[in-house]
Each structure stands twice: as structure tokens, then as C-alpha cells.
Length: 284
Image (tube, rainbow, N blue to C red; front, side, top):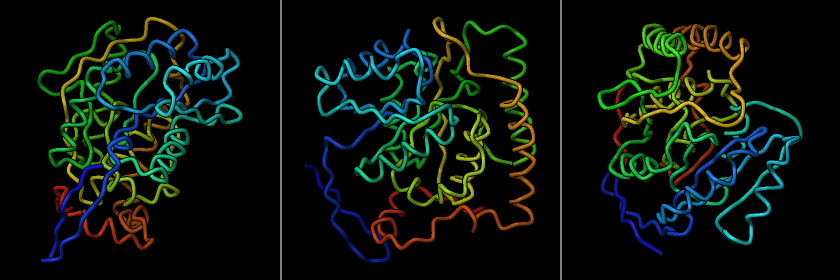
């Protein structure tokens, strides 16, 4: 148990944090039998008190069965939520976010199962949030970031999508489509998760956009992204189309439909009201 003293507007409060429930890595899966055991082992080998939640969408290849076989090895640290059917990346993460908030985790991570995100970078994302950011993004496109094993056309598509998103939304994030992210609990509590519109890679853009619109600081941390070596990519034309049209929709809603009000969680949460000044907020 650790204690943090929080203050805002001359009001002081004490927050008790269960250290065992501080950091949760959410990994969505669909047919990842080649990678799942190795990625789970890699996270726990860090010895940094990360817990892991797998959200499996009914993988016919037995991914969930492999996860269950590791329960005894990582008792109380490894968890599995099984869903029926392939329901989309965004809904998987939202399911995981709600699970994490209900359990009381303080820092919630998104990470792919295929080692395109290096587990060794988890602690760097954590430290960025611990030191004041509301959202820490593992970024390919800031100084020090890189991409390995992607063909030139895939890199061009990704960089073009990032530039397109920044131009349309004005969001000051150089890698808005990135899927290696850490959120502070307070950020996810502030967002109306039911109001998030997208389920593919546009989900990643919208979560950052919502966080930014609500005034939370986004910190980009340079990483090296490596293309998967095992299993199949989940990218398809529908995901690309959603991303292109979704960015336009986000901009439209932010201009004419009071997006900030729609995406802000309206339930009463006294803990969030006390803690929010602990995170750097920016005017929008």
C-alpha cells in the first residue's frame, strides 16, 4: 500500500493505492497462438509489477486456451476476458478499460500481441504518465522513433495517415494512429467510453483526440516499431476507410456538435475532481 497526498483549490485528500493494482497491460487477441505465450512471458520478465489482461475475440486457433494454461504460472497477475466473435479492436480496449477501472488500476496500457511493440518500453510509457502526462504514446515519428521491417509503401501510408490526421484535427500528436499507449486512470474516467464512435484504427485516433479535447497532456515517447514475424496482420481496407472518414467526422463533430461535451463523462466522481490537477491540463 502506498499513499499519495493530493490537493486542489486548498482542499487536501489522501489517496490509498494498492501497489499490486497499479499497472495493467491490455492485449486484444484474435488468432495469436504463435505470439501469446511469448508476449505474456516478456511482460512478466520485466519484474516491474505489471499485470496483463487478454481480451480474446473467440480465436478459433486456441489463443484463449494457451492463456489459461499460464494461469498457475502467473496467478493473480494474468487475466482473460473472452468475447464471442470478432468485435473489433476499439470495443476490445473499451471492454478492457472498464474492467481495469472497476478493479482500480491506476495506469492502463494498450499493447499489441505480436511484438511490434517492445515490452521493454512499457516502463518508459509508465514513467511519462507518472511524471505528469495524462496519456503517453509510444511514437514512431518523433526524434528517436523508428519503424523496422515495413515495406516503403506501408511506411508512406502510415506517415501520410499521421500527417492527414494532424492537418484535419489540429491535434499536436505526431503519431496519432499509434497503438502503444499508457493512460492514467483519471483520463479514462473522464471520457464517456460509450461515446467513442470507432472500432478499428480510427479508435486510436479518437481516444487521443478525446483526451486532448478534455485538456489532458499527451506525451510522445520514442519507440522502434517492428513488423510482426509470426501470425497475420489484421489490417484491411475497411479499417483504412474508417480511418480516413473517421478523421473527417471527428473534425466535423468538434466544430459543430460540441464534441467535448459529448465525450465528457458526466457521472459524479469526487476522486477525479480532486486528482485532476495532479495531471497537466491544457486549454483547448
